[in-house]
Amino acid sequence: MQNARTILSPVNADGIREKEAARSFVHVLADTSDRLAGVCTILEDRFAVAGERLDAEAKLSQVPAAIVIRADLRDVDNIAALKRRAGKLAKAKKRIFLLEHSSHVGISQAYALGATLVLPSTVGRTKLLAALTDPADGSSAASGDTLQPDNAVEAAATAVASMFTAVTLGQPLDIDGTKEAGRQIADRITERGLSEWLSTVRRHHEGTYQHCLLVTGLAIDFGLSLGVGRADLERLYSAAMFHDIGKAQIPLAILDKPGRLDAEERAQIETHPAAGHAFLKGHDKISPEILDAVRHHHEYLDGSGYPDALCAESIGDIVRILTISDIFAALIERRHYKPTMPRAEAYNVLCGMNGKLEKALVHSFKQVALTR
Ligand SMILES: [Fe+2]
Ligand SMILES: [Fe+2]
Image 1 (cartoon, helix red, strand yellow):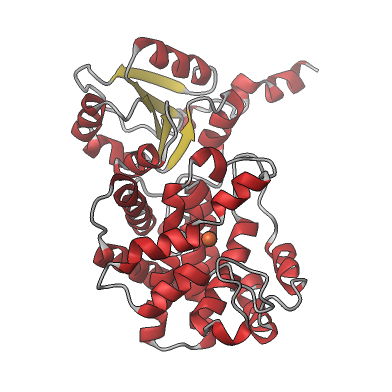
Image 2: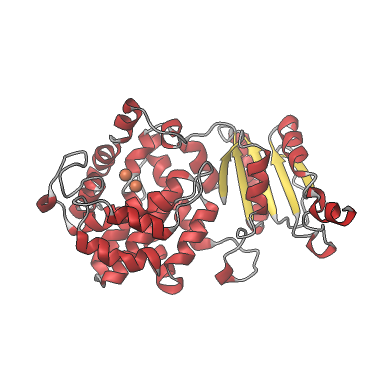
């Protein structure tokens, strides 16, 4: 009994083995003493913790396995303090930001500062510990046991984040940068396959950012499996990167609502394809095919979709591929309030959408959904 307790005790759950002590070191940064103490208290019985206020002189020398940052990112001094520590932050495999005020701009800001995961500061002990101890997390298997950040994923997340920030703040959009991020995802998937991309993205990102990265990866792999040419592949990943940009105008309280949406909330969500289209319309680097895909990715062949209730003959190939990738991504994405749906189950949902999706394309999607 005594032995069992020793093994199962949470404090000793990892055995706190000597060798693992260095990997279990977590650094906490916060903008106030209260917040610092709050986070440290949660972590102290599981990790070796060092805390530091953002306004203090940066003194960290040891490289931690993870950094947890709790700060109000609306405060420019906090941003400046984090930028000063950027070099050190980049060395930690996990950089978890706990946001005081969840908003598109706040989340974008956190990713721009190098976050690998953004959670609300109200997330609670269990979920924070789970995020820190997730055994699959921390580094991509394919890149080995390295302390380097996962650049392709981070670059893509930053591109999505800055796109949302630009819309929210009414700033110009970096079209070339966003397309370049899409191209890098295409290279990565060509090199390492779809499954590695899906699992890496799901480990590191939440909400709309995770969704955009998943849809882009799926659309690319679907395009590759169909043997589309380079120009079409570029259209596909660009359309996927931009497809939900209209969600930048929808409050996170609705986008990230765990339960069912009421009629009013649903109506608000359904404004995003037209809003995205309206936003991109003025940019000369956005082609008509991309505009069409952004506006129509929620249309169905039987005319039951939105915003224009288009029927089959008016729905182009890029849109059809994007719609299938989009639905599948929404089903398999990881949210902090729900587990991911297994890929086989998600594919069955697509197969059950009779009349809405092109049957032959859904059939072709099978290998993407299940095996690639
Ligand atoms: Fe959408
Ligand atoms: Fe979407």
